Image 1 (cartoon, rainbow, N blue to C red):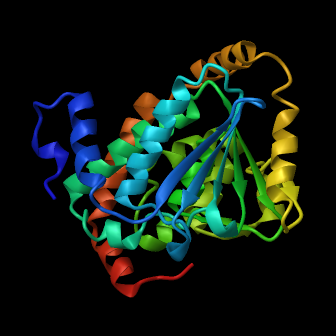
Image 2 (image 1 turned 180 degrees about the vertical axis):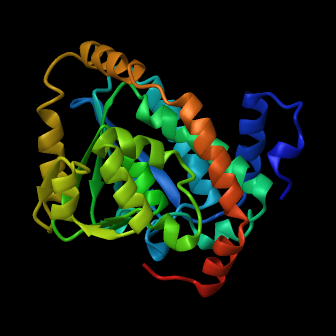
Length: 278
């Protein structure tokens, strides 16, 4: 796969389209969207259960399409992001990662996902990540792109990138600082600790903890509804005001550059060979 960064003549839109066209061919799983017009609440499902919903190239492209559709949902109020099979997301699919292992391709993937995650973060809808099972690596980064996070009491979350010899590649490091503060973000990122729900709540990383069981989705929907009681146009305006007050584009560019330097490093290569389990 030829990295986008080898062609400086492509515009941002052209680079995004080029990446999309090639990543969509790297199959595995899907991102599914359902919209309830009555409640104004949508559901994004990360669906790759045989790999704990790890993100393939195709899933990254699916997510881009889902975000595009939600950006123009005029009657929408909120969106819940969750994983199929009662687990959130274990990060990037290693079968995909091994196909894009150069510095240039790591930067390309990071640039693509920064675009998608920033647009998810800025959606004019109130977004909630429902964390069940595990949210590791890129899965934890996806969770930070939502306005709120709710968590099963048996779920685990970990920014495990340091164990893999790599930085946060999807903008999660920058967003994490805004959620938990500088000191806690450093602790979380450098320790690569897998955290249980109550520690996440204590640090301010999650907003609510629900009992493990079949009612997690219903409880999340009920929790979100309290912020979706007014007209959709007003909710979308409030969300846009809040999103516009929190721009990270310059900082994300620096995070992307640092990530690409670690992507093809010896540390990351050795970690991949060891097939580290979290």
